[in-house]
Image (cartoon, rainbow, N blue to C red; front, side):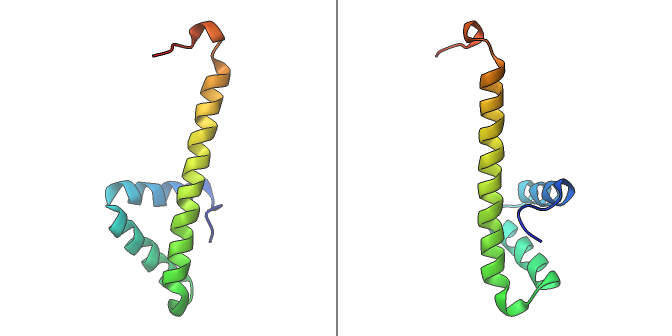
Length: 80
């Protein structure tokens, strides 16, 4: 399991993240890591997964912003 998981896995984790606070998201990740991996490394692994998920979310957001900006003609861009 990694941050480069299938879209379904990422959607599941993102849905869970929006349902809970950040602290609870960390607990959810910890629980998942304990179930699929080694309990002695669970804290480190959950932290790494959370960091990877945040980084992936930022990358996806930036890609969407760049795509939207590129799809607009210069005359359509409104400056505020």
